[in-house]
Length: 309
Image 1 (cartoon, rainbow, N blue to C red):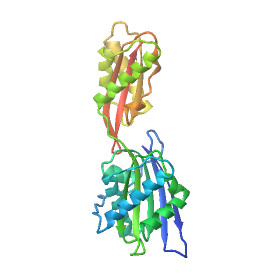
Image 2 (cartoon, rainbow, N blue to C red):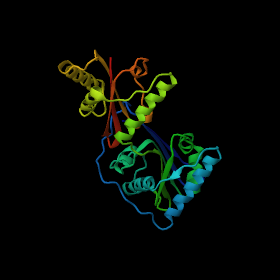
Image 3 (cartoon, rainbow, N blue to C red):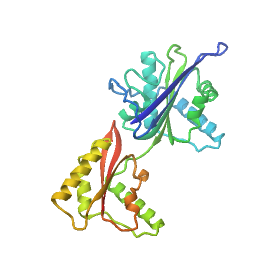
Image 4 (cartoon, helix red, strand yellow):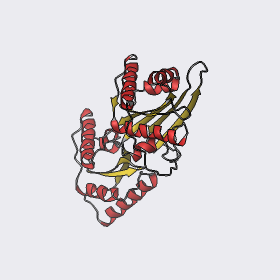
């Protein structure tokens, strides 16, 4: 799920050409409570850069990284997919004569990146309607909220999309800067192996021997994981626990008098929180199942841990 906050600013200096700026930050937060945005689902605009436009995009990219370097920050990597999405938004604003982060046709920045098949943890966006790249970047740097996006440390990549012609002034250029923390989805098998290593590393720090998932508890976890809702909620976890209870009642497992169940919805296994039952001194059989899923177009991992008591 996503949390979205947008602040729009219009800066007008009567002694200089018109410059419009807008800023947005979109943080991908699992479990955030904001409602999804309704969009019309229109196909994203695919706009090839016109003559000299790509040079302007690279000029702004170099300038932006120089501005980050002045603050001793790492450079952002230019991503063509982000640039395509950004250029499409610039063209959309020009075509439909609006200046905002949320398009009536294509939705918010997060909606547009999801539609483009881009996997992200964080998205930030700056907009500018200005006579040239230098004027636009100078204006963005003078605005605290735009500056915060430019110097953000929660992003890794950037795409800059420019089209000729402003919303009102055909001599201006429209600029969209899309910042994102990009990532590669993890397979269920890779995630399972990583979680086992996370658990055993924590046990080793406590002086405890390693554990390996398997046996009947593993089968129970795998069976219930296939039924879990996306994203996982407390009701779904309770139902999984009740089903496991019934299975153990009908088919007892020697030595198992009870169990604990833990479920997590994650973007990556590195964020796995170890259930306390797996850090007990007494070794206990446990089952671990990981299922690949999607929520609003973004890949997720559904993880279920069943520990025998």
